[in-house]
Amino acid sequence: MRYPHIAICFILSASGLIQGQNWETTRHLAEVQHEIVMLLIEKGEFGKVPQAANEIFLLDFPQDQERLILVEVEMLVDALVHHEQITVAHQVVDLALGCEITDKSKAQLHREKGYLFKKEGKAEEALKSFERSKELEKEG
Image (cartoon, rainbow, N blue to C red; front, side, top):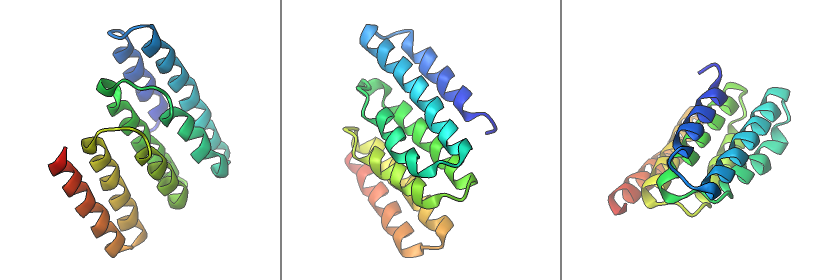
């Protein structure tokens, strides 16, 4: 996707229409922070990306909106992989795994880690991540 930040802004904007004021504030903060993270990636300031991304993950997303955290992770991972920053991509996924999210969402994040390991040629780690994803999916 050439302009993934547009997609997250659209998703966040559309979902904000049915939530209260707290969600509205969270949504706006997430949109702005997303732009900051994408600019850091664009500028090649990869060392700042995990902390900046974590500011999004630490926002108070309602459970019915936590899918947006997953969308954000996927977009950031795609951008980082495009810049050959797989280590930073792993850090971003690990930070998202630290969020209070459902097992089903954690399963998706472990699947994302599996793809990263696979891209690195680390088959054993990829297998463990995919197995963990499957376990969490069954639990969730």
